[in-house]
Image (tube, rainbow, N blue to C red; front, side, top):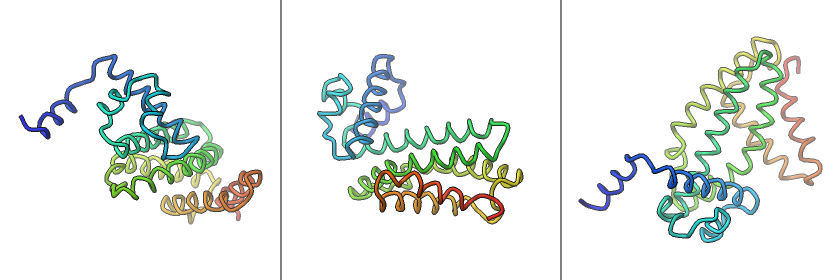
Length: 195
């Protein structure tokens, strides 16, 4: 059995409960570390924060890029869960605007991780394709409902939302941190119907 076949076999086999818990601890520690200090945190430090050995980290994530990619996908999965919660809300207008705020909060860290992965030659779109497609579809449904409720401008598309989130993050980075929420709110308010 060659190395690729062995890796594929391991990937298909479900993890033991203790291995799954260790993997989750590593991902949680990495997510927190990357959010606080950026993607440059060493793997040994992530292992320390997770309370596992460096070998455990490397067993689950053979490279730093693999760990970065897993954290990025995990964050997108978190956003997908949150947009689904927003879709369950009875009033789509407030649900949409609350979720737009969530998207801008997530976006800054996501962009930092995506930049780090791109720098190392990772195809970020390929890594996030499945969860990204599901997220775009659910966000489109939330947008449609908010537009039908008269809360959001009817000329806004899902692609516009992506561009506005990127713009909101750039605007927030260009002002003092104390002004960032106000700037982000201005971008969010531009989506309101009647503007």
